[in-house]
Image 1 (cartoon, rainbow, N blue to C red):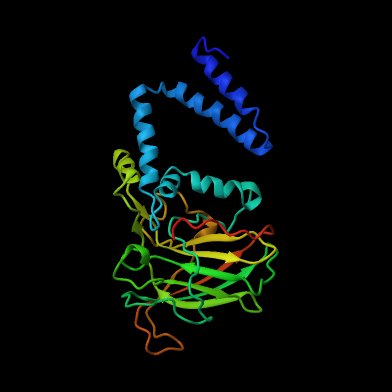
Image 2: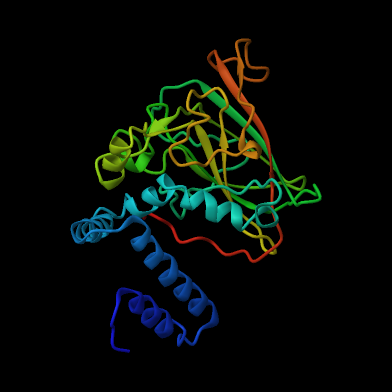
Length: 297
């Protein structure tokens, strides 16, 4: 159609989107046009601001590499990642869920580790951490044979792909649940850490006077045929940023009980003190077992 006034642009664009053959893509694109055009009108977006926004989107892409994903980082910092997660799990956000953010640091092909083994692969100073966990369905029945991918940041606040001082795949490992749905391993106690702030996200946080910190957490990705892949993070409630996560990922169901022990370890006299323990239950929902696309290589 010939555009005679600014309102006609939205009508024309929406009508074109209506021609999309795929029903779901059509629904998404029509809504996108209506809301995006509504946003432009609502804030009275200027031409200079539009050019700046386009440049920022291009920069987000350029800053995403094999070891860093600025787009995912931005989505989390805007609360989009957490919202999408909660809308699609726990009965569409009506009940608690063990599901959480994938984050920008999951990698495929973590080394397999026997239950009871350690995921520390290079010298990593820090208090010992002993994790015991169970994987169950929504009724509480154990899920044997589930593959559990574990990863977390080091006590200096860096994942191994960010830190040349750490061995490849340090603090990463893949476990298999036993007949009772259990898995267990040894690591070191993680700390909270700042997300990367040397790009677009960092500039945004500075302009908003926001801190860049995530509270200490343990990542898990659990695969079991017949169940939706569970992506989870378990948070330490003692972390000073537990109620102000820069990525909006902390929910009540994801707060773990990281217990500090001053007494000797009951089975290993060589374990230093203090040491920590975590006991947690992961609950999976029935669905298609489809792995997410890794954000980094």
